[in-house]
Amino acid sequence: MIQTMQQIATIAKMRTHINEARRQGKRIGIVPTMGFLHEGHLSLVKAAREKCDLIVMSIFVNPLQFGPNEDFERYPRNIERDREMAASAGVDLLFTPEVSEMYPKPILTNISVANVTAPLCGASRPGHFDGVATVVTKLFQIVQPDYAFFGQKDAQQVAVITQMVHDLSMPVQIVPCPIIREADGLAMSSRNVYLSQEERTQALVLSQSLKLAETWLDEGIALVEIKDRLIQKITEMPLASIDYVEILRFPNLEPVEQEVAGQAIIIALAVKFGKTRLIDNLITEIR
Amino acid sequence: MIQTMQQIATIAKMRTHINEARRQGKRIGIVPTMGFLHEGHLSLVKAAREKCDLIVMSIFVNPLQFGPNEDFERYPRNIERDREMAASAGVDLLFTPEVSEMYPKPILTNISVANVTAPLCGASRPGHFDGVATVVTKLFQIVQPDYAFFGQKDAQQVAVITQMVHDLSMPVQIVPCPIIREADGLAMSSRNVYLSQEERTQALVLSQSLKLAETWLDEGIALVEIKDRLIQKITEMPLASIDYVEILRFPNLEPVEQEVAGQAIIIALAVKFGKTRLIDNLITEIR
Image (cartoon, rainbow over all chains, first blue to last red; front, side, top):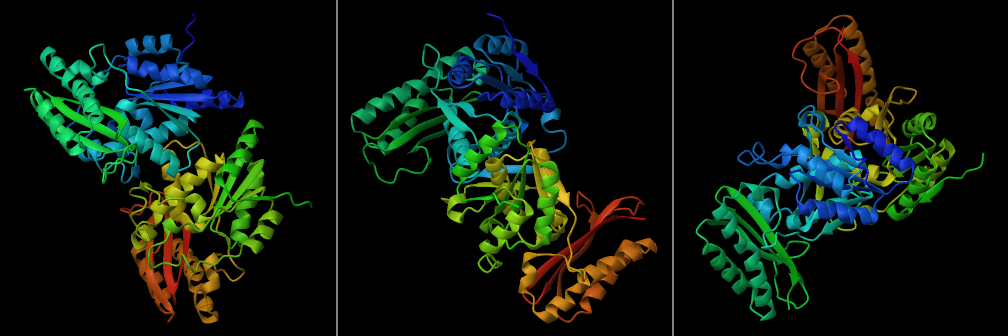
């Protein structure tokens, strides 16, 4: 297979490619990433290949979505490896702008989404989803995609972007894709590389406890009880420090007022192992 | 001349037209308005005809950009008259969505622009420019224009949108167009219809004082002195109540720290006559 992927670092050059693709009537897909690719990202490219004629992957570690005490500086980067993986997966254009290209001057424009950003990571990471909404909008303006592919591991991110796209009538269809896991169940994340061996082992409690929650739902255990059990289960791991364990309605992320069979819910976990904050979730329904 | 203008009330139908126009490689221009058209709006259409193959005019009185005590409800509307004027001026598609079409549910997404929204109308009308930035973005997403035409009477609006388009890399060129005035100098505005005859007469002080300011600049009068004279001149009108009289750098709307010849400035006025708040401005430079 001949690799024809092109790497593009400037907005101007990306526009030239996009204008040509649009003239040719191509269906454009974007897979926005922060790089350090794993199988989760590649599954998004695979999904994009089914719907699109031109696949753009962006690799941009976006400073706007990191808090002052978060891991922007040390976020893992490996552009050479990413380039090979993206090319093999079938990416056509790899967009790798520097921060100085995306934000040549301090950006004065901010996009915020209410309600759906209030709980979960929105509560733990103030400003995070403003940064996400703003950079995703900018990427959409540059790439003008017909489809955009996001992993459901970041379920709240998907909810925020879906709300924004609806509110602003953006001409793009958001395609959420399933969580991809390691063989032992750990949800794939670029941040997994931070984990020590011991943290890595204990982090399995996330996927394991979500599996248990599924059986508890089958058994008709009440949600408050399931939440307590999850907290207890995770707390058994000495290296685990819970950020949140929540069960909310999906996709609006509102509290479950009444437990109605068939109602879609998300069980969402954010837990620190050492310095590394991991998230995982299960989207399911009340039995 | 055969009138082929089409009036479109839904986002879905507008998308169909826009997709077809883009397939044909047409250059699309948008003239966003709140209707009750006057020669100022028509001058924007004229400017659009020089650059574009398809001219979309939107008429939408956007509730987001009105404060709770402002004139959203009583803002003048006359769609039949607007339709005739737009068709005669050469508009191709007249987009007239209801509020329920633009905001079927309360909109959760907000776009704000810092710095340039701080002084002038941004200070007097909290939230106004968030509403403007949000609706303009939504219109841009629906119409996907190559060019967008705005009147310089709303100079701060032009500055806000220009900043936003730059920050978010929107694929649209903002074209500011000169203020259009009545024969006696009053800047055209849909709100002029609110004025009583006496208010209308006294409102001439706005354009007259801006003319005087130009001569004072020629004479080398200091800006602080010019500002004082403007305030004095306007205050002579018994029906006038000053909201602001400001001289700022243009287009960043920052304070003039040092008076440097050749530096672009805006002299901006907002004055109430009775219940009617009028704005006017002069973009010029320090001599």
